[in-house]
Amino acid sequence: MADLGALRVRFVRALDGVRAGGPDAGAYADHLLARWGEPQRRYHTVAHLAAVLEHVDTLAEYAADPDVVRLAAWFHDAVYLPERSENEERSARLAERALGEAGVAAEKVAEVARLVRLTVSHDPADDDPDGQVLCDADLAVLASPPAGYAAYATAVRQEYHFVPDDAFRAGRAAVLRQLLGLPRLFRTPYGRRQWEATARYNLRAELGMLSPDPAPGP
Image 1 (tube, rainbow, N blue to C red):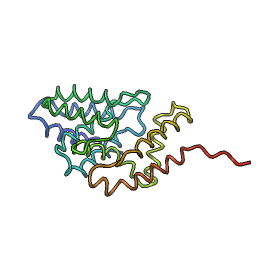
Image 2 (cartoon, rainbow, N blue to C red):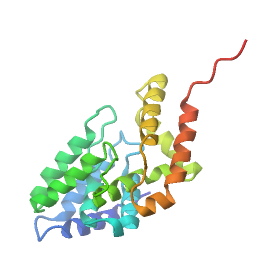
Image 3 (spheres, one colour):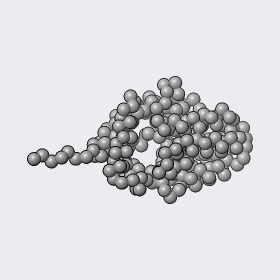
Image 4 (spheres, one colour):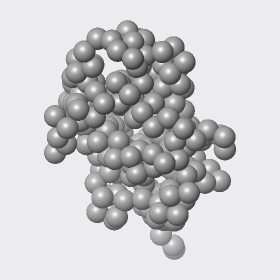
């Protein structure tokens, strides 16, 4: 269970790190934590948020502006309805509204929103260190040990409980193939060294399980 109090403190620290003052940061943290705790979530939960923030801390040395990346982590799935396809865009717009109101400078607001939108593709440019850190942190779950990866895959299926099995397998397989088709899943040196090989193994294993069984011979 994620420590909501500790997460609240982390948000306040990140927000105050990118602004010179403004409204009470705690109110924004509480609003975001309520969103991350919505009942339709099974994987994109407060636990996922906490994990991404931990991974951002691990990768912070590679970021140009770690607090901006932390705020992007807070907002990247703040709007999440499994049946909708525009969650990242709606999350980015929420970031633009909330952070602008909270007193964050326009250029930093724009950067947070850009990073949130980048999580659609998880394909940051070579000269985008903040994008690389956020995307690596978000994808780090793919390099989980077997039990952790199985729990992740199960939670994703539970979020899409309304999708028939055949349609889910086809859609999930397409996502896995898209990820495996990237030249590199992880762009930071740490991610490439610590997570790349394990993540590809896990993705290939899950893809194999999603593939239909071959027809029996005569």
